[in-house]
Amino acid sequence: MDKYNRVIKLKLYDCFIKVIITDTISSRVTKIYKTHKCIEKDKTENPGDNCCGCVVDVDMNYYLLYNDNYPITTNTLQHEIYHLVQVIMKQRGIESKDDESGAWLMGFISQEVIDFLKIKNIKID
Image (cartoon, rainbow, N blue to C red):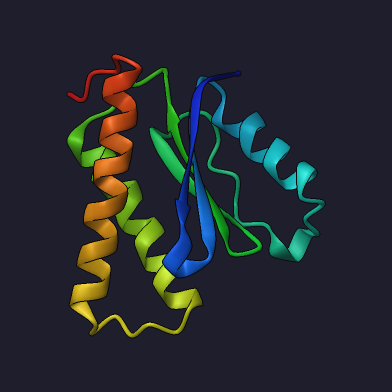
């Protein structure tokens, strides 16, 4: 069940990121795929409920999920945002050598997620 969520719009990249704090990552990932009517070949492996977080990519829009059953650490936060940035850039043909674009995007998303967590009084360990 989702405890909190927030949508971050990235106008420059013509996409959105939905940040979701949930206690059931596995069923939430399944629900995302079902909502978007994803066919099997478009799905990535469902990480299950024992992971701290994950990124789901659907139609060049993104879901950034964090598991409420585990503390959200700086490491987990940045780890998942890094994966997210890599997917966004790769899908848009932005070379990984373009450090500035990735660094800007990482910083922007990180600040948006941190601000969201602060508003919801969710501690980052």
